[in-house]
Length: 164
Image 1 (tube, one colour):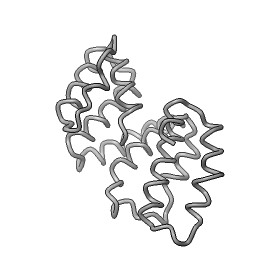
Image 2: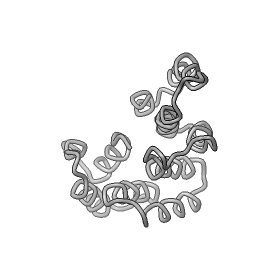
Image 3: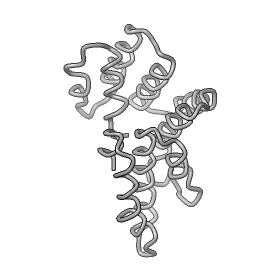
């Protein structure tokens, strides 16, 4: 689902949702944690495709206990992306600020990159935000920025391709 989202292939994502994800979510044997991870992946993919409405439906499912599986903060990140893309920039900014208070440095870096992209920041700020994120992230993510010709390109790649 993530790859389909990154590629912006919403029609294919809809088919995957209908054919595979839906039946799995509807199966009473499916563990609630699996629901959370699948809905997170689906919401992230919809947000990446630019389908904010579908993203928010997945990411705001009231039956899911997001914090129980450690997805509350990453889920909030993608909710903010979806909200901003549908025109609720103020709500997205407030959500990022609220999440950022509790976030680890890596997630705080992603939130700052997302906000810089939304604000149309200058090259220096993009480069600084990417460097802060890479410095805080222990998962070997430097490859995300390698080969980028501008700070904005690196920021866009990190925001788009980082898994959470």
